[in-house]
Image 1 (cartoon, rainbow, N blue to C red):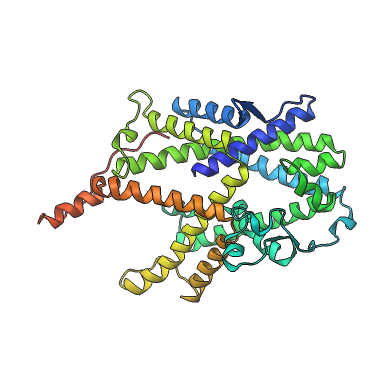
Image 2: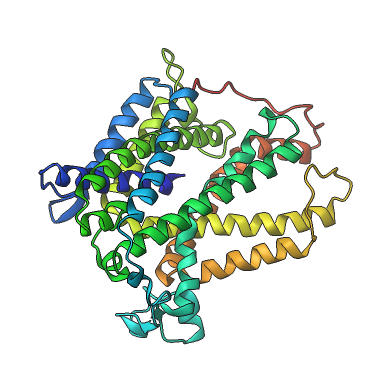
Length: 395
């Protein structure tokens, strides 16, 4: 959620630059301060929403629904308008021929972990490049699992949630495929690949449809705005819950007496997101999100098998067809996508994991409610009927 918010803020800055440029204002999205490149748009929008959330601003479901419709409308606009600029010759070759990467095998950090471990020459395009690209495209599908968090709020979740998840994935997959076909049909793929900061407006600007690019930029800016607000709010609530349970210092779970919002943790979340979005390349952030999410899916897939084998007495709320082969296939495919991420991404991931383990074993394990309860039982005390809970902050 942290890196996801940073990515959205980063793209907000990119689309802001595009909108300003189309309006005749050539203001770059990145400025240099003391030799460091800073995405000022990303920092600005993060700061604005951090202040609003600290003040207790609430995004109503109606407003959220309106912006969701707006985001879908932008995608449909790209598909419909872009279709008039498609040139069939741009689809040839449909799969560009394989060729070595610029750095080659000498650049250890930028090649995929699979290429480095297997000793194969790093390449791009071709069939292998097509499969490797899936590890980055996966970023576009992140978030579908959040639907499961609403299980207590829907009727018959065993049937409704799987249908909702699969229906949502089907819709966005069709839209993504259509957008991809339109954009790659409008201009040669090299135009998109060589763009400094490629976006939905890149192809429209290249074919001279500046008016359409301006509409897309404004619509995307509005759509990303609500996404960033929800992510900043969710990030603060996750840290708040971990602090309340003792996994992080309890000072982070203090709320404002006046507004009943977790002011301290909201400000910290905003500062960290702004720093990541302002100073980190968007490609680095995307790969970190992908490898983190894919690793979580691997653990979930393995966890389903372990839980069904070790605790057959627990009544399963959801059926898993083709057990255990489907979870195994899911874990294998996720690992394959992870292996196609760069070696440097794996190093960052392992460092992040090490920091997480250090926080948990050095602090969280001893101070958490569950840890204290286990220690009390080990000392001969009777188990508590229910662990204490704290009130949650106002949304």
